[in-house]
Length: 241
Image 1 (cartoon, helix red, strand yellow):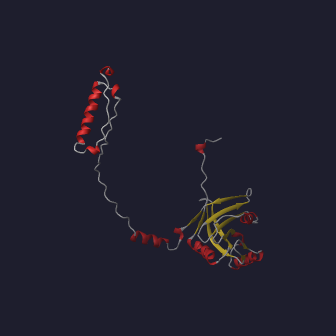
Image 2 (cartoon, one colour):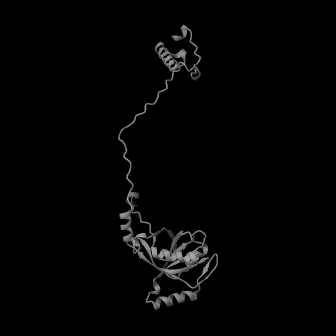
Image 3 (cartoon, one colour):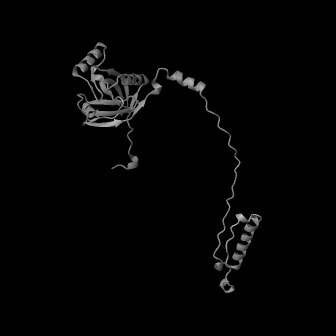
């Protein structure tokens, strides 16, 4: 068995969406007052371990507040459109749908849709009007399993990204930071003297106590109300030994 420190941590996979694909998905979600869904094509980047959505299709469907029903006839029409455009029907590996105003999550029915996919794997994405995302991958190779992966937007993938970066560079500057003086200000914390009970003091300790008490008294001279003079009981001479 290899040492735990020697094990290679497998990087987490993720789904990346281009800005134009994001706009298309959100346009569908915002302009349909119920659930809506479709399929698409995604590229698997095995070396970098991530998935990139390349294209999404809106399907012919029946919708209500809780589901969108994709008829088998609608899938056949999608394949017909792909063939007419010279696209590979076998490249469909992405399924998306919205949850309208509800939170984005995979319901039991959503999981069943993933599991019933006839291909080796399917990438599922749930969105809503608040632009919340959830993504799952269902695979049947080598065994059937599902796992959730994070979703990121490829903001740098826009056609205008380079121009926007240059604009930011030319127009946005950091505010100068105020100069900080190197002078160190030291604060001397007033030390509180703690004395023993009088009957446990030596003569030197008692003298120190008297000197401190006198100094405290003189600092309050003329302001008797601010002075709290304790009652001190001086022990008999035999108690000093």
